[in-house]
Image (cartoon, rainbow, N blue to C red):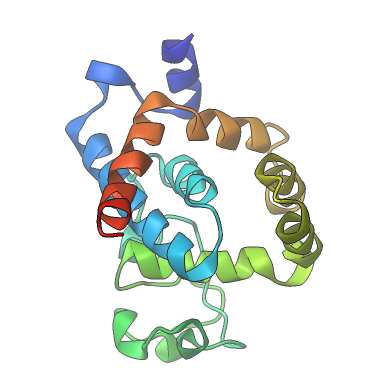
Length: 178
């Protein structure tokens, strides 16, 4: 079952997982946990989306593994980022091009802001009241993706043993320091 699921998600699992996919998973898990501590968007959701949307890190130009586009209506400063973090400068880039980030954490923090505002606001506010992460992801997926199986893919990725373990390891420094 895991091998079929892994193939459906576009990655080998267990000992067959490539080193580049393992490295991206570890790096993205750390960035997702970092973002979660700042935005309160669950690292599980962020990491699963990043894995699926980037092909497990195969498509991540400018640390943008979530396909975020440049929007001149908001500046990076509003998310605690500086223009220097965006390679090439975001103000010089045409609206609609893909954003460039200094790190995966910056990309994830920007994406978290998206998931808490605008058309996603009701889903976020409901999640804040009831704490039901699965229901929140379902609400977001209906708006976020055209793929009717998007929620199922996110949920499946979140429950892969490799993903669970990567998040556990990424959280270790946080728990051991307290």
